[in-house]
Image 1 (cartoon, one colour):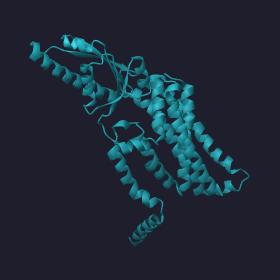
Image 2 (cartoon, rainbow, N blue to C red; image 1 turned 90 degrees about the vertical axis):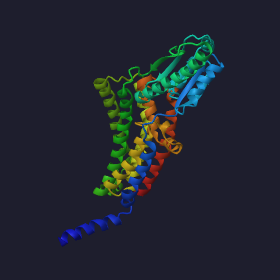
Image 3 (cartoon, one colour; image 1 turned 180 degrees about the vertical axis):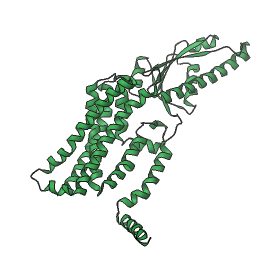
Image 4 (cartoon, rainbow, N blue to C red; image 1 turned 60 degrees about the vertical axis):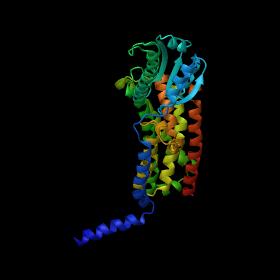
Length: 375
């Protein structure tokens, strides 16, 4: 019994001496609680929408205002032709597009039924379904107000319908959730494979004492770094190809865009994940430390703040600002645009540039820290 007590004391003393692991044990849960508490919400709000008002009347402005004042929708832009709407939906700048016809007000004033066109980005099936329910409710309330007015003035029956929304769902007409989540899984798997493998591989050399042996070999430091990273890069590309094939075979999720463009977009993303993996491995002394750092400080924030599960626009402003520095956020936009929309380089180049900018900061920093440790 005494031996067991002494052994337990030894474990606590060893844990206390580990200055890097101790903060992780107690601070990581608090950090995760804060992120999860603010980021995770199943409410759908701040839905961006674009309007093409061809009528430009008091009635059409009132109809648009009913969306803006609902608390669920945020007006992104007003356009003057239906062709301009494609840009906002293709670039994911708007989830909803409303087209109001020229005779909108005249038909209302004549007591006739009028149709408006509602275009919905169905990429995210859950958000699209909730948005459609909001649209139905807002249209019903607007119709009710018009009916009350006309009933008082002309004695029209209350069952008379004024506005009939013609709804079209783009990119994912069947509103299948798998079409939205499976492209995201590619980004998540690529993150896990490159980040975790890189962070564990280098620190494992430290634990086994083989890193010192590599340093004294004729191999140059640059070659050592490249030799460590290239295998994980190749593994990452192979994983992407495997998941794309599996998505088509098992879930009938087809890549509508260019496979070459998808593979090219992986390159700036890998700059970030490999760099973060190397940085974690460099500052860690043990594989346990590396795993804790990689999972709690990088993987989980990536998962919560990238839009993989929860829409970023529903999060508080400070969390949305933090998400701008998560490369997985932009990679998911690229993946879902390529799979669901068949987007090209003209729609995705800005996300690729942002990922490249993040990678060009993270990767050289990690290489610099690693080279200093080798010196």
